[in-house]
Amino acid sequence: MEKTGEQRRRPVSIEASALTRCRHRVFLDATFPEELSAAPKNPGATQRQEAAAAHREAIRQRMFDADPDGWVHIAAEGTMAQRADRTLDACRSGADRIWGAVLPVEPDTGRRGRSEILLRDAERGGYIPVIVVNHKVTDPGRGATTTDLFGWAPAVDENRKVRAHSGDQMRVAHLYRMLERHGLAGPAQVAGAIGYNADCILVHDLSAVLDDYDARLADRLAIARGDVPTVPSQIGECRTCPWWDRCRSELAERHDVSLVAPGQRADVLRELGVTTIDGLADWTGEQPEVWPQGPFEDAVVIAKAWLAGAPLVRRYRQVHVARADVEIDIDMESYHEHGAYLWGTLLNTDVQSVYRPFSTWQPVPTADEARSFGEFWTWLSAERRAAERRGKTFAAYCYSRSAEDKWLLSSARRFHGYPGVPSEVEVKEFISSPQWVDIYQAVTDQFVCPNGKGLKKIAPIAGHHWRDDEAGGEASMAWYREAVGYEGGEVVPSQRTRLLEYNEDDVIATKVLREWMSGRAVLDIPHIDDL
Image (cartoon, rainbow, N blue to C red; front, side, top):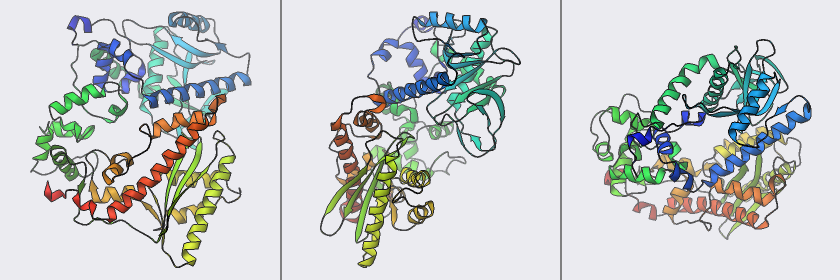
C-alpha cells in the first residue's frame, strides 16, 4: 500500500476545504486517491451536500428572479477546464455578476476552486468572490460588516455580529488568490458569504486572513506532495472521515493517547512527554497548567478505564437521579434550522407508559409546525396541572437539553399568537424549574464516560437497544426528506413510521436509563477507586 517518495511527489491540487482539514487526512487523500474514491460515502456527509446544493439553487433562483438579465450563468456543462475558460471570458468582457464561476486549476500552486458568485467592483475594478453556504454566517448582535443581497454597499451592521467560521475565511481567501493570479482580484481585498438565512451578504476583510491562508496552503501542499510527514491523531473530524478505521487501528496498536484525550488535549500531553494511554493512566504529578477541555482527572480515569475495558465509571458510590410520581420523557426532532417537526413524548405512570407524538408532515418551515407545537405544549401543560391537582409530583425528562430548549424558545417566539403556543416567559419558567430534568447532565455529573456521553453510547449499558440499526441524527435527516417529499420528491410513508419508531426508542431510552440509575444494577459499574 505504501508508495514511494517519487510517487507521492506527483503534481497535486487541493481545494480550500483541505486548509481546515486534518493534516494526515490531506496526506492520505492525496497519496491513495483510488482507495478514497472507492470508500463508502458517509450518509450524513452526502445529506449535507445535497442540502447545500438545494440551498445554492434556491439562492440562484432568487437572484435570477430579481434581475433575470443581470447575470452571466456558467452552467454546469462540459469539463471543469471549459467552465473555467467561460468564466475568464465573462470576467474579461466585464460582466457585472457571474454565477457558477470556476477558476483554472494552478499546477504550480496546487489551487483549484469555484465561487458561486463573482461581483465586479464597479468603483475599483476587479471581482469580489461571494460564496453561498448552508450554515449561519451571522448572529443577532452588532459589529459585522454586511451588505444587501442585491447591491454591494458594505456598512457596519447594528443588528448582526459575525459567526466565526474559519472554513469560509479560508475559502474566500483561496478564491481571492486565484483571481489575483489572473489580474482579476478587486483591490479592496474583500469577499462575501451568503448564509443559511440569506438575509444579507457578510463581508470578509481578507487583509486579516491572507497571511494565515498562505501559510496553511504551503503546509497542506507540502503534506499532499509527500514532503512533510504526518501521523494520525484522533480529533472531532475522525467521526466522519473515510480513513478512520485505518487510523483507529494504528492508534490502538500503539495505545496512542489521542484515543482517550482527543484533539488539543493530546497535543498538550505530547508536549509533556505523554504519548500513550498507559503513560496517562500512570500520571502522578501535578496536572498541566493549561488543559483544554474538562477536568484533567477525568482524562486519567478514562485512560485507566480504556486499559481495563470499562465502558463507564462511577464518580460516587451512590448514584442519584430526580424522580417523580408522574414522569414524561420528551425528545424533539428537527430538520437543520428549518423547524422542529416532531415532539415525541412518553407518559409514565404507575399503571403504564404511553408514547404520544405531536408532529407535522408538511415540509418545514411551515405554519403547521405551530399547530403541532401548540398541541404538544397544551397537552404537556394539562398533564402538569393534572398531577398538581392530584397532589402528585411531576417531572419531564430529556437527554441533552440544549436542542429542546432552543426549539422550545424559538417556537414560542416564531409562533406567538397561534392556538396553544406559550409565551417565552412561560417556556423560560418551565425550563428553569426543577420539573425539567436533563438526564445527560445527571450522567455527566456522576459518571466518567470513556466512549462518549451520547445517548446511544450510554443507554445500551443500561440494557436499551434501538429497533433500527441505522438510527441516528444524521440518518434521520435523510429519512425526513423522504417522509415529507422534500423539494418535490415522492412521499415515502414508511419513512414516517421509521422516524416515529426512532423517536419512540429515544424517549424509552431516557426512561430506561433513569430507572437503571435508580436501581441496584448501576452498582455493577466500577467506581473510580476500583480501577
